[in-house]
Image (cartoon, rainbow, N blue to C red; front, side, top):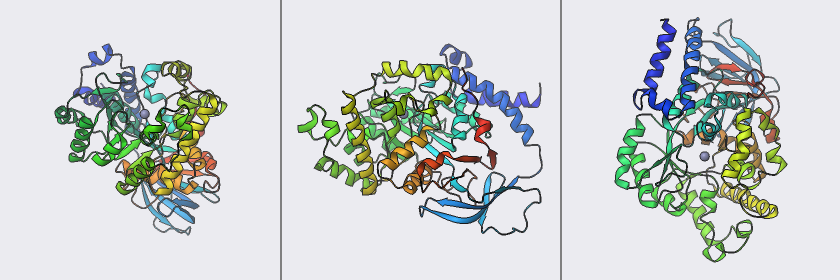
Length: 486
Ligand SMILES: [Zn+2]
């Protein structure tokens, strides 16, 4: 057996050793898991081969503008020096002594460098498994769209771990993947393929013991969970140093915030808890809600006081839940990038989930406008926002949907610089990766997107991507995007 094969098999064996035997995976139909194992076998060989070369590569992007998410400004005329996978220095554009003669030099004149974008709400198993698409097929879409890291927001943890290991083994075509627990839910879980029931707060420590073996970066509370179990999940996760994200249902936002939740996923996790009881029964009330009502004002004030992150994921509400029949969602050019099996599955999944929800088209449009109004209000009040998409839910294209989300955030009242700060620094911070990711600074990982137009002038310029650097590795979108697979 070749050394490469042995190493790859060892990797795969490590992947499955703590959970279930391979036979179980086969019987359970975890195609994602098995596909990933196969691709890890292929990728491990190329990574080992690449590692045989001389010392770390040096790349310089000379004389570009750099977006600083801390000050929310663009600094002109800088040179970024990358050594290996990290940023060695950010300096004025003058000849730099001591650099290797064979450094790759990239002319950044007239170009704009952003920290690598992060999608703070994706699924790399959920929905894909139902459509028969393994997670590896969508990974290049993220990198091509300038997204160098993704935060999973709840998945089958064995399959998600394998997707993450595949992404780590194939950095030239994959973002960094930060995995999450399954959706911790009531019995039966709303999504049985990626959910996990916890019916008693006393069971929480044992479940977290088991999940921690997979090193998730986020613990996720889902809609069926009530306060007793939810509070136990938050307390026990915090005791272990893990942040908790919540898609709320039974557990109210007021209670979850009082109990210390770290992030509220989807604008629903705020909106559904600011409707006064006396208007809740009125037809069309969601689209006419007065956002200055006392319930809303007090919850917003508490979110500010506790600095709870809110991840609106407006794009999934527009493209899937409220307005999937609108051309902006149904016919968006971004949809053409996804594998055909997923594209053909989306209408079936829309039916299965009773979308669109919310009455007449005019009612649904008013409701979506309210979600945007609330998002703008949260921003102006000082609630830290995240930028996530919920890809690959119907018509939420992995990778490119983040640019749609940025556009929706700006249309909701965020300045482009604030939306970009959220998509870089805030998203890195909620992952507790702010020392490694989220800005372009010496010592951080070299995750950079180089644009040919200034995104502070028009947020749609984030789509003008010349190249993407992931851990010092230069990638070009045109080489990552292939005609959609069958
Ligand atoms: Zn989700």
